[in-house]
Every structure is written in C-alpha cells, then in structure tokens.
Image 1 (cartoon, rainbow, N blue to C red):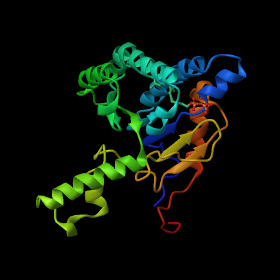
Image 2 (image 1 turned 90 degrees about the vertical axis):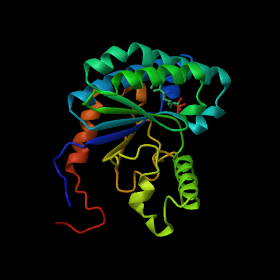
Image 3 (image 1 turned 60 degrees about the horizontal axis):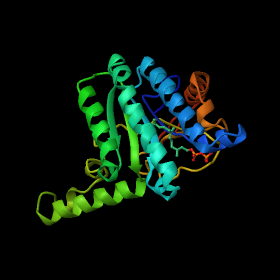
Image 4 (image 1 turned 120 degrees about the horizontal axis):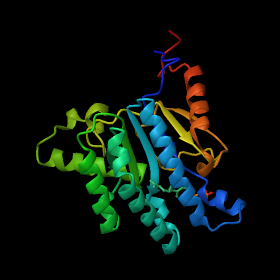
Amino acid sequence: MSDKGHLPSHIAIIMDGNGRWARRKGFMRFRGHREGAESVREITRECAKKHLKQLTLYAFSQENWKRPQREINLLMKLLKEFLIKERKEINDNNIRLTAIGRVHELPDDAQRELAITMEGSKNNTGMILCLALNYGGRAEIVDAAKQIAKDVRTGKLGLDEITEETFKQYLYMRDMPDPDLLIRTGGEMRVSNFLLWEISYTELWVTPVLWPDFKKAHLEEAIKDYQRRERRFGGIRG
Ligand code: FPP
C-alpha cells in the first residue's frame, strides 16, 4: 500500500518549544505561549484551506499539571481566549471543533467555553480541529480498558469480541482516523504520551523550529517530506 504524493488527511502536532522561544528572546515563558497560540491560528487556517480531514493539536497534556500553577492558569486563560475569539473563524472556515482527553477535569470556565464552541460548530462539514486537552495516551488506553471491562461484566460485550477494531471504538474519538503524519516542533525525538494507540503506523517528522516560529512554510515542508515517503504498513513495496 502506498500513498506517495497524496496529502495527509490527518495531521497531528506536538507543539513544543514555546518556553525556549521566549527565553531566547529574553521574554517571560507566557509570551512564548501567546505566540504559540498565533501559530495555532495560522496552522489551523492553512490545514482547513488544504481540506485536511483532521488536525489534532496537543494543547495540554496530563503531565502539564506539574507546571507552576501560574503557568497553568495562563495556559487555561489562553485556551479560553482562543475558544471565544476563534468561534467566528472556526465557523467561517466550516471547521468542526472536538476534544480528546479527560476534559471533565479542566477548570469549569474552560469546559464551558469548549462546550459552547463545540456545540456551535457541530454541524460544520469541513476539517475537524481536535484539541487534546488534559490528554495522556496511556490514560486513554486505561479509560478504554475500564469501559470494556464494564461492558464485559454487564454482558454488553463478549470477551471474544475484543479485537483491535472494537478496542478502537472505546477510545476518546471512535471515528477518528489514525494520523498520517505526526509533526513535532522543538527538536525532541519523543512522542511524549501522545496518541499512543493511534500512531502505530504514522509517519513522524521532527523539526528544530520552535512552535511560535512554525508557520505555513514549515507546514508545507513537512507535507512535502511526507509525500516523498512510501507507506507500506508492514507490507512490501507494491
Ligand atoms: C510546549 O511548550 C507547549 C505547551 C505546553 C502547550 C501548547 C500550548 C499552546 C501552543 C498555547 C495555546 C494553545 C491553544 C490551543 C490556544 P513548552 O512550554 O513545553 O516549551 P519548552 O519545551 O521550550 O519549555
């Protein structure tokens, strides 16, 4: 199987390097996050224009709670601002907003703005913008396993019915296609507990460019590189 030359239909991004960007410029870390939010806007718009099926952004990981409370508050404030300010742009671009992660553990006001933006965009038919919020890949698998155990206990699901396909139905977004391309900015060669189940066959692209500097040209470069690759999904050259 090969999809050489095709546009990836689902891109996932680990947006790293906001803090380093700020430090290099002599700013507080928060300035880096604010600039990072600008990259979120630009990259979302570009991906929607390219008619991608889905863009998934790692906006807040479960591990991010370990940061100082002040930084967490600022990240939540930025998220709320984004959800309020971008409502119109999201609808104008026919984008449907969704979220994955333990969203019910986010602060109430962030949950409220998220719910309003998701509800307002639910009938849009263009690209899905999926924000990973309070997300952890292992937690996603644990949450799925717990629900499966419950369904087996109540007889809703038979033990032999647990296959990779049925397991997927218990993940946060059951109809989410696996990402074709995972981009990581900031140069680290790790997946950092992101979409562990879903990236089994995803192409990886890591760039030293820090997230606040990541713009349309870098996205194009990542897509070009992806298009040169041959995906065989464990098979042999066709
Ligand atoms: C990593 O930078 C990035 C994050 C912790 C979260 C990403 C958040 C944004 C891009 C801000 C706004 C998001 C939305 C959806 C509006 P880092 O602080 O770990 O950078 P460092 O590794 O250089 O310290």
